[in-house]
Image (cartoon, rainbow, N blue to C red; front, side):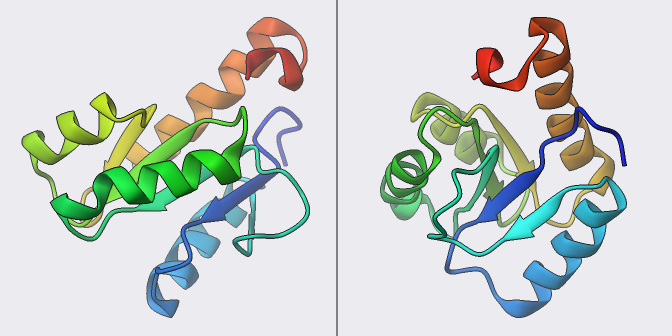
Length: 126
């Protein structure tokens, strides 16, 4: 496990079990724990699942409230540039489209770890 990777990723509560299982496997390979939504521990990163365009604002608002200073990444149901731009304009620090290579998601998480390393300690990067 790389010590500078995010230690906790919170997934939006409306994700189904198969998505949770897939992300748990991918993230655990990176040394990142997938924690349940709404726990007492503040997350290092929030993955906010966006199901529809009309829910982007609400989902990101709830995720942002839960995240505190942690970055929020939108999980999009498919690759759609308009949806990506909307999520970014509403505060998402990045987006990952389901069904695309998981390396894209891993890259977003590595960028968070790099920012922490650059600042010398995780708390300053947020």
